[in-house]
Picture (cartoon, rainbow, N blue to C red):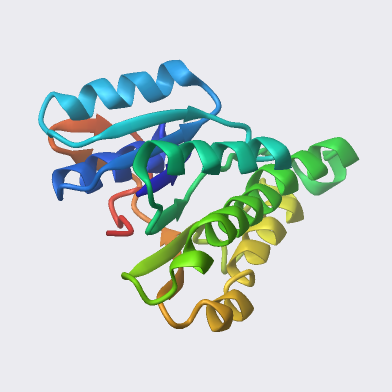
Length: 203
């Protein structure tokens, strides 16, 4: 299973949960030291295969290379947890164009690129062979997000609406889901995750 943003927050919590169920993991993130720390945590209690991959999901060519690297390490990607992202707290009238574009590229474009490459490089070539899924992690933003401006709401809506047409294309083997983060705390196997809204995990 490929988990983006696997070095902290929801991705870290999800990695612990998946490993406890026996899943081999490909953890993707920008900072290798964070990924290494999560791997060390998991290896204390779980005997699963874990590969680490440094990637900025905003960079299209790097995403292509990373998916290829995961396939070289594991031979397959049956499930993608499309989790990587970040927040940029700012009232709309104070938000620069660059800030808006950064949020969209990080949280919408990056998710699209990762899903596309996982599908194109593996899932499309193995239709019907096994169960496959893509899970998009989004925020509970249905009633707005005070202090976050419109940029945060729109990019999460964009990721949500990325689902319907791809779901029809991939219907033979795949469920494309959007998982909403809700809870404020999570404790996975005795490891505290302060204010990480990952208790409602995508397992």
